[in-house]
Image 1 (tube, one colour):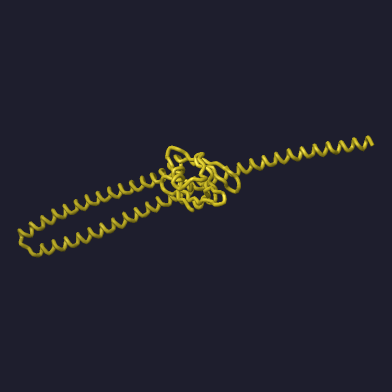
Image 2 (cartoon, rainbow, N blue to C red; image 1 turned 90 degrees about the vertical axis):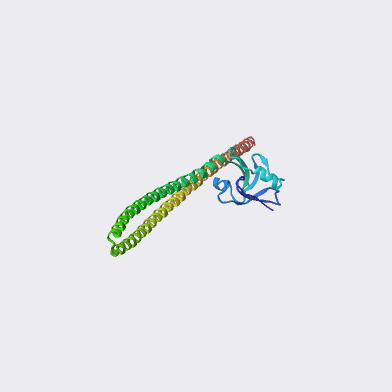
Length: 254
């Protein structure tokens, strides 16, 4: 039986009830969820407690309530991995702020690009309107002159000028649109690359931190094991020395 905890109000896990132990096991970590961004919970981990509340015997509804996320409270998870029991703390505020900062930077850049595009469009419209007004004035003067002179040749020239102006204006607008679209595509590509780079740096930092913590725990376990072994060897040596002394004393007496 699978229980999904992957909505926005949960930590983002797909849990499976183990018939052998009766505990919930992580079947999958939802990509992009809180648990995935923390980098501390893996598929196969056996979840014992969340916020010091045991999960064994919980139904789906009660499990969803326990796994619910509040942005002002961290989540403490107790789990078993490889036969060892561990506890971690998911700092929800930090995970949320990482995501909000990334989205905020992207939205700010998009807004800046949009405002720049709107300003350029307004300037273009003003230039076009000014050019149209100038052309209209010239055209009006030519029309008045044509009417006064009654020249049919001037009417033909006016039509030719209008056609040439419209053609030039259309080419200019097309070039400006193409240039603007190209700049916008370049800015968006830079934004994607920068967002990907920042996300990769955060992932690498999280992995490095997790690796450092695991190495520290492993080194502590090695030191503790070595200390216990040395104590056992010292005790065995003392016992053998005492036994050897006793045998020597017995031989001396004999």
